[in-house]
Length: 113
Image (tube, rainbow, N blue to C red; front, side, top):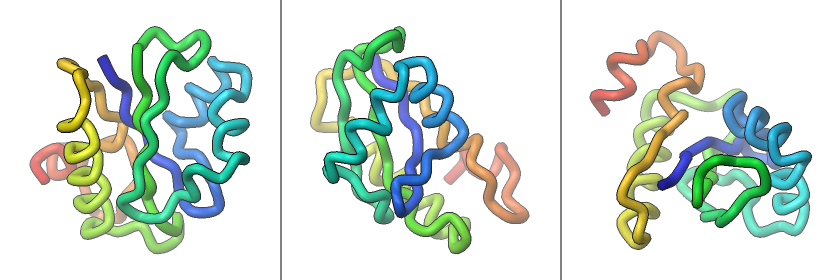
């Protein structure tokens, strides 16, 4: 099982990533400070056994700059998450990428990309 959340450049957490970080008492922020993921578009980092998170895995997906996040970048981030998952033993995934704010893009359209 895997939860998928986004991270913008400069290690800015998306709302879903912030919620998991709070649940895990800052675990995600601590790992990001080590420099393994900077939030650049399409970069990914798989985390295992995040404290207090009821999922075996959490996939962090780089979203690029928050102010430049667009439909095209959303699609690239979504594809990167699928590619990262394909190399794992995860059989179920829950993506919070559709919750990301993208100008003029509905949740329905985001899930169709």
